[in-house]
Image (cartoon, rainbow over all chains, first blue to last red):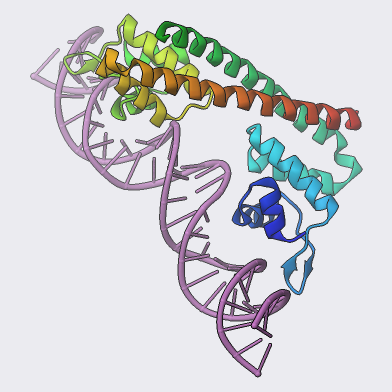
Length: 112
Length: 112
DNA sequence: GCTTGACTTAGAGTATACTCCAGGTTTTAT
DNA sequence: ATAAAACCTGGAGTATACTCTAAGTCAAGC
């Protein structure tokens, strides 16, 4: 898959894909004559990264996770801790969003 | 209430409170000898703004809402539209967060 | 009355996450 | 073979939302 195809499939700019690679949020993509050719594994990683970014995980923590992953089995527990912490943050965020929806519903009710 | 008290009550910096006032996300606070003295109405507005910011609303849209509010009754419908749109965005965000939690639960399960 | 600490302002600086640009290479279609 | 389109790199620029700094004002205690 070319960078353009990935870009279109996930509605993300080519610049962002190169940027993620540059800062190590995704692994260096294999190339043909210097041109990126994304494989299934790479696509799966990108999908994960995009889902996590949409949930507010920083690129820094995503790079950290990838670095741990690439260090192998010995980092399993560190990864478990990292993912568990991030999950807790997201759940807290969900609560905040629900509170905001409640407030908005109240204000919307007053306006109708 | 002084700026310090508000800052402590809501765990937000004094700088941020001044910043919100400067850019018009909250109304000019009444002062005594040039020093801010937050009243009940002002506190309520700040609470709303903080809840909305926590939910991801931009300071720009919050300013827009306040501007409409201060223009009076004639902007009721515009405000309704604005709040309804923002609510929809938050609900979409909640879905994304839930998807991320699902993915994380799966990964966490594999690590345990 | 003078120092200390909290407050004020305008404006500069920072962090995060892209996004764009210049100048060069490769692929594709004619 | 060649022109146009798509790709590459390193690095500069931008948007958002603060956060900090400098220089000055104000209130309270000694």
